[in-house]
Amino acid sequence: MNLPQVPDLGTRQLQAVAAVAEYGSFIAAAAYLRTSQPALSRTVRRVEDVLGVSLFERTTRSVRLTEAGREFLAVAERVMNDLQISARSLRDLADEQRGQVILASIMSIAACRLPDILATYRKSRIAVEIYLREGVHGAVIEDVRSGAADFGLTYIEDLPEGLDAEPLGQEAFCVALPKGHRLCAQARVSLSDLHGEPLISLPSNAQTRRIVDGVAVAGGFSLLHAIIVTQSPTMMRLVGAGVGPALVPAGATFGLNDPRIVVRPMSEPQIERRFGIVTLQERALTPAAAGMITVVRDSWTVPDIRI
Image (cartoon, rainbow, N blue to C red; front, side):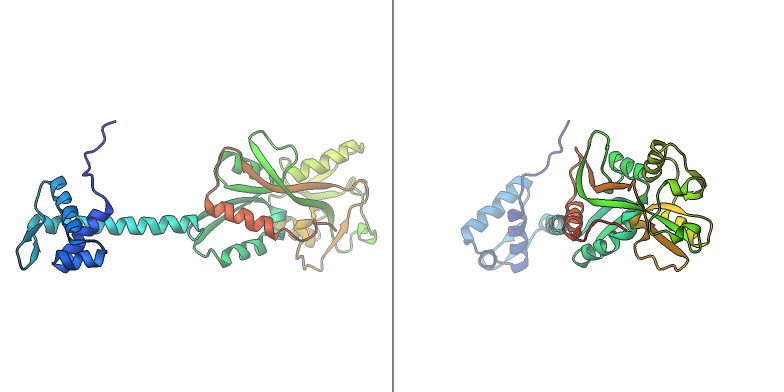
């Protein structure tokens, strides 16, 4: 690679030229820069030697820029200004005052915990852009593994190679029932109680769907997934409309204020999953992303999500 021939000049030398041009005097400029007049003269002479031109016309009474000096001063001021802007920008990035965080999360956590966590994060980082990607477990894992997301919040059992997990807690499954459904009379609902019931469910690639299907098969029966949706809020609205029951993580019912829906905990076998922070092993987190993970970790102080 052929490197460009760049003059060997530093910011102190650029400041020296700018100060002499500003004050029109080596003595006054030296006082401003808190250096000696001979030292300042040597610095300016060094710049002139490197450039091969005279920057100042020196007389016993005044110091004035030459035509070449005026052109160089404009360049020097632009370079110093650009360096100052860049340094401030880099400090903002390091201090989490600027940047972007892309977070992937399963829908139950996004609806339950993230609003308060993001509000806490934003209080001191108002210039950081946050992009939340909500989806099923498989989509969250793929976002993290592909690098589309800085980190994920999802279930942490059986993760693929190359991903690290930090546990945060557990989430229990429950049954959301339309008001008036025959199972509303029970304090708890077992999975076998739902045998033959037309369920509102997530797609087959959703981790929650695979979990409940696996437990049902182990019990010797299968579940009837009558309506398939891709978003937990849509699922809950369908339950409220009386379409049918749904098996959901407890987080999906957080803040639920729909009198048409009755939520019941599951009896044996209870279904629970551990969830946490998922990161890509070889990916270095940006300061903004690392700061958000710290807020997530510090904010996770309430009990596990159960019904």
